[in-house]
Image 1 (cartoon, rainbow, N blue to C red):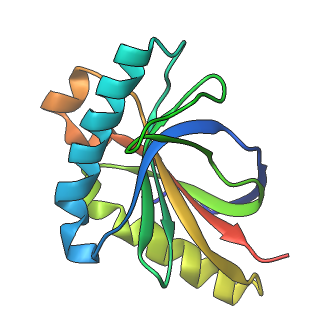
Image 2 (spheres, rainbow, N blue to C red):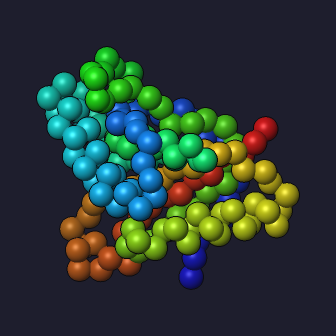
Length: 152
């Protein structure tokens, strides 16, 4: 059974990301590669307390930021930059299961917002749960939090 859709306020969270324009068909390759590159930067820079992986999408231009939550702003390099998760009113849900299925969570949020009179901005994002060993045996437990920013 899908998790409910909720409205909440999102707070800005500092992130270390690679930003690029990516075609939807290339996301499955780009996201893991960018996450790996960002983690290498975070370790080499000694950034304290890195958090969960994230992916922020801005449609229709196809811009995506992929990386990891970080504890504080930092100075990046030519590839990895300091950014932050969006703040403001959001519609959100949790997807449990393999990553290939969380497109449904995005669709459910869009449909729920349309039915309840909430206008979506062009920004959405995912926060991927820290990998747990039991997810290898039971992928239905993989957690991804999905957010869509609402227009003011």
